[in-house]
Every structure is written in C-alpha cells, then in structure tokens.
Length: 180
Ligand SMILES: [Zn+2]
Image (cartoon, rainbow, N blue to C red; front, side, top):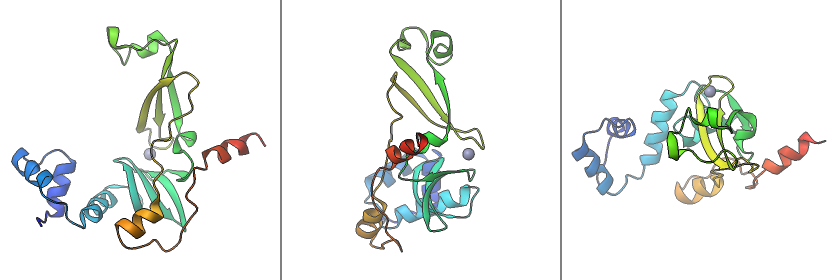
C-alpha cells in the first residue's frame, strides 16, 4: 500500500500538489491513517486547542470540549451541541429580492426571488461565510450532515470514543425551547 506523508496530503488539500502526484495519490488505496493525518493538519491550522473529532468543512469542525461534542468554527467560536443544526446559532444574511440577488447572479442565472432565497450563514465571531444555500422560501435551514460519530469511531476507525451519546437530530428540541 502506498504511503503518503502529511506534507503531500497538505499540498493536496491546498491544491498545490502537482497533477501527476495528485493522480498517483487518488489512484492508490488509501492509507489507513489518512483520516488521522488530515485531522492533524486541520488541528494545526485552527485557532483552538480542543480535539477535532471530525471536520465538517475546511472551516467547521465537530470538537470534543469538556466532554461535550460541539461544532466549532476554525476561529474557536462554538455553535453548541453537534446534534443541533449549527445554522440556528449563526448570523444569517438573506438575499430575497432582485437587487440583492443580482450582486451574486448574472442575468438569466438568477433564480426567481418570488420562489427562491439565498441564505448566507456567517460566523458571529470572525465573520467567515460558512455555508450558502439557495432554497425555496419558507424551507427550514438544511441540516447537511449529522454524522454517527460513535459508529464512525468504533467501526471504521476501530477505536471507540470514551463516551457515547444518543445519535439523534436535536434541532427541533432546540426550536421548541424558543417557544417555552
Ligand atoms: Zn469563526
């Protein structure tokens, strides 16, 4: 099995690995510790010390913090329990008219603002744009990825996490708390 070192993986992530080397890496079977190398690289780039359990995007991570699993921005801002859609705790910039949408779309590419709105989810601490979604008006924020962390660590990585938590989408519970 081909082994690629961390420096190669880092170059691949940054898009600066030469194409022949990239092809070589893509074609070969994956090193068993590829995930660990990837997490190690991300851990060295973020501005917090807590352990990354799983990167959700290059800027957003599930992190172990005081025995809780929370979503954090690379800047260290916490969005709370990873089982609640982090978008509920972000700043949301909505484009839902022609004037604001035309800053993003050109001509016929623009969706009809009567039907579609563009939502930009922004970190309240560092201002990074973390996600963008174009959805029908009234559609709840899309919860893109709720991973089963315990299964992933125990069955895929072969090293269970020290604790287990109920694997369930808690987003509606959080919304219900708002109306109490
Ligand atoms: Zn941030």
